[in-house]
Amino acid sequence: METKKMKFETQLIHGGEPSPLIERAVTMPIFQSSTYEIAGNSSGEINYHDIKYVRLNNTPNHVALHEKIAQIEQGEAAIVSSSGMASITSALLGLVGPGEHLIAQDNLYGGTLHFLKEFFPKMGREVTFFPSEQTDNLESYLKKNTRGIYVEAISNPLLKIPNLREVVNFSKRHDLVSMIDNTFPSPVNFNPIPFGFDVVLHSATKYLNGHSDVVAGAMVSTREIVKKIMPLFNHLGGCLDPHACFLLHRGLKTLGVRVRSQNESALKVAKALEKCSKVSKVIYPGLVSHPDNSRAKEWFRGLGGMLSFEFDGTPEQADLALKKLKIPFLAPSLGGVESLYIRPAIASHSGISRADREKLGIKDNLVRVSIGLEDSEDLIEDFKSALN
Ligand SMILES: *Cc1c(COP(=O)(O)O)cnc(C)c1O
Image (tube, rainbow, N blue to C red; front, side, top):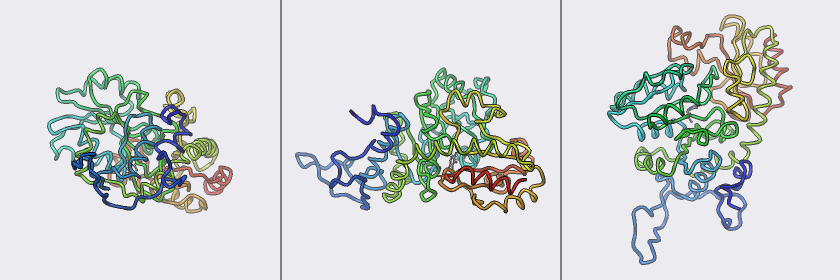
């Protein structure tokens, strides 16, 4: 049986692995070679497209990783890259050309938002933002030159879930290319391609690798779309180094067990935080109090390891209380084995004014937490003693 037809957990371990095994090694070896000898075809002719070179993302470590990631996202093909932003910017530039227009959700990851606002127009593209809660009037954003729509499966840090069904239907009605950043749910909780999206993007730095020791990205789509982006991607040069490929490949094998555990722990911690006296509001898609709870449960297999809460007090008091935490580290990024927390007003969203933050619903006393793999009882004890 081909691994393509197997289940997710089996694909994580066996999908894309070399067969037969290389020197019978059960783990894919690292091919730390930038270039490869050219064999030529049977009549000795040399074709440029047969050249293997790390920047072309086609060495054995890339090939294995591409197949594994394509399988777990249920797409035809994948490309890994040197960061999530390398995948995102390459996809945006490759699929929305000069003179063309993109419709994008307003509360995107900071890097993506900044790229679209600052650089996309300078590169001859147009973009219009829509509020992620309002997907019922997307037609009103449509222009003659609209080429694509871009959303995130779960937004940061308020963990909103746009009406993805309406986004997909809109995109199909107008023959657009639909792109989704699936970093937060990871393919354990959601597969956008069978749902109807054309292009899936990941910061593999987060859950896919899962150990806070690699920066990487991935894009999954049809063979045709991946082929279309490849020349631009190869020239922009955002390739993934073979050693980083190996680490990501290794991290991926435990994606299922990691994320399922993080789903469970985050729900437990969210429920415990609701009872803490110094917490005025808890935001987690798995709580019935979350506005998108019903669609989240309908579309997602699990609700992820990310949660946010509002501290009952000033931002300074919040910082003082959070300093008492012994387990989570104060650090940006997410999706690793260790729990992390951050106050978005001083980190990911510090670049925008307080007024604009308030408009987005991001208060200065909002705290975002990435739940790791520590025992949830220890995490709960830690939060309780800091926040009661
Ligand atoms: C971190 C992140 C990115 C950017 O990824 P890098 O690997 O840091 O380039 C993009 N989207 C989301 C949702 C992220 O969390």
